[in-house]
Length: 209
Image 1 (cartoon, one colour):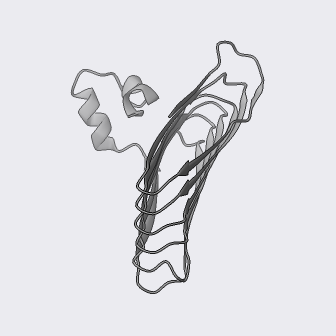
Image 2: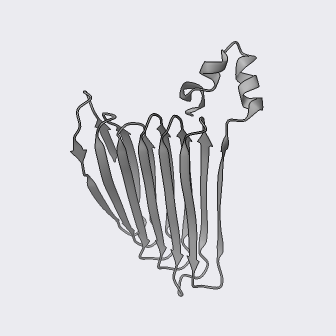
């Protein structure tokens, strides 16, 4: 399933989509979302995924537009042996503000989750990543990984990274991590050695992907 939100002008407007997927036993669901709306627009979207046993799901989110943007992703394992992967990338500049809030609810045993979100921030923009993985008491054999990485291209850009784990079971493999930093001097040198000027090497065009 693919969702695409595009603003053709610079008008201010509000977008509020809600998507819910119910994935049956041994089913598969792949979701792709591209958000590149007007930089004066407001976008608040939600995705909820309910998974049965041995099902596989993924969410892939790309966000570049909007003045104020928030993505809420909630997944729930209702049967054992299910898998989910959440991937997100956003790039901001000016005074843009982008929030990513995720919840992976391990309510069944032997389920696997993988989560990777990346942000590239420039200007006076701000980003927020709030991720939470909940492992219930009966969800033994859970395997969960959560990572958030952020790159700041200006001294005025700011990001709040809040990864979280709530583990109530005792036979699990869970880990999370977060990194935030400036553009590495070695990376800039590499780009300049390929004939790219300093301003372009430090811009989002070279660092977006």
